[in-house]
Length: 93
Image (cartoon, rainbow, N blue to C red; front, side, top):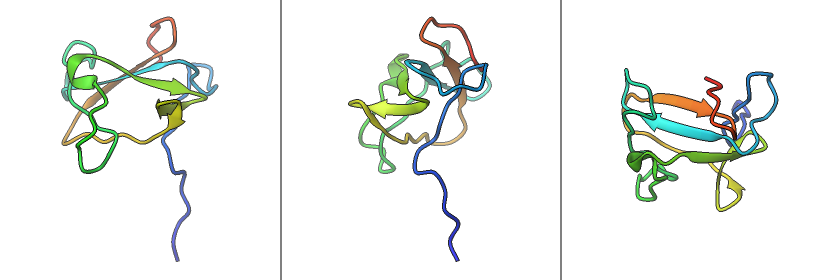
């Protein structure tokens, strides 16, 4: 038997609604993600960078992280921190 799970992670705003046009920052474990960026990737082979190593964010659409306007997953090696903000830069978590 196999458990059916969602194919993509989802992110929500402080009200519980799907995060629209939000920002997902990935950082070094133990630090605020925007102040200590860490690399993340759009594939498990870790060959397609998301841009987070340079401080860029992964964008959201309808609560899903997106790449080229399509829902996607992303991968990080080891421990990490995460900061999620809304479209106005207000920290959601």
